[in-house]
Amino acid sequence: MKTFFQKIAYFFTSQHSWLCKNKRCFFITLVVLVILLLFYFIKVARNYPLKIDLKHEPNFFGVTYSTKFCKEIGLDWQEVYIAILNDLKVKEIRLPIYWDEIEKEPGNFNFTKYDYIINEGEKRGVKFIINIGWRLPRWPECHAPEWTNKETLETTKAKVIRMIDETVKHYKDRESITAWQLENEPFFNEFGVCPESDYWFFAKELETVKRLDDRPIIISATGELSMWRKEAKLADIFGSTVYRVVWGPITGYVRYPIPAWFYGLKANLLHIPKDKRIIVELQAEPWVPKGSIIHLSEKEANKSFNLAQFKANLQYGINVGFKKAYLWGVEWWYYQYKFGNPDYWRLARTIFK
Image 1: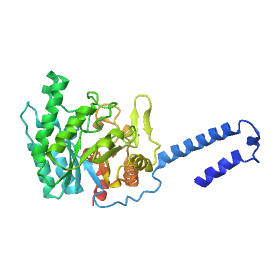
Image 2 (image 1 turned 45 degrees about the vertical axis):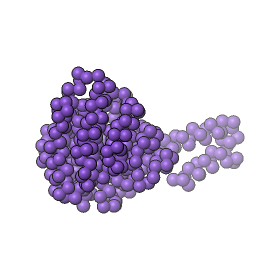
Image 3 (image 1 turned 45 degrees about the horizontal axis):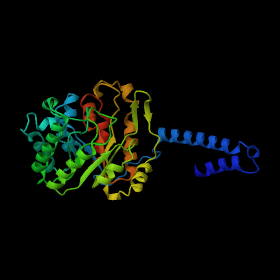
Image 4 (image 1 turned 90 degrees about the vertical axis):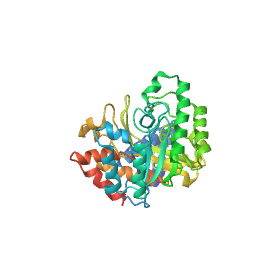
């Protein structure tokens, strides 16, 4: 491809070309090259990666597992979780511990559900990233208990610090926990039903965790729509999301024309060590324009995700070159498996061997 572009550039800029005898030579050359580059990236975006072999290091892939999302799509969270452990044999799990599930009444903490999850994982050698805070994966992003609706924002923030304190104290002796992820995309204000991000409040959350435990802290950012500066500065480990096909109310479905090396380039520019980079969310389910994912027709789901796209996304995640990649969508694979479409689940079995 490089040789092709060199030939094109020579054709339009060579002194032997009739175009260069015209004063508009440079402008025409620039326009043509831009058009060719756009065509190339659009073509690559539709077929990228061009080679798919899915070769990866053991335990490179993990999953994000959400008890709340299981409930949202009508699944039993324990059934799904045991299938993840026993059938897929996943060994790396990012586990959000939702505030509204552990403190349903002010000051009364109940970790029974998450104790079970971690206990069962430990029996099978699973390693966990524990995601704590107010803003965690899955819509509406911020998962505060209903009783906080009657409180001021500042009072709620104080309760967040208390919740983080209680959670870290409860789990800090678990050897299966390799890292804490603090909040989820904490400085991304364009998505979710959440208060405006607050750098100084986040710094207080960070100090709370560091005071209680010395495990590394992961801070995440959107891979495509963020410059990563704040996150990279504060994180022990940086976590990027990676999405390939998304939807917007103005744009409709958009396939990002971004090569896999783009993420590594951003990380290099910010001097993030290579062993301190992970993909915290790699798209492995359809994007949902509105409503629930289980109400998407097959035709609509295929606009952003199908089996071929699943394979392409897996390869893309490998090609990014980060240390690990946590897949986003395991609950949906199981839903598809249970209700007549086993293809996604069967493919997942092969990658967690």
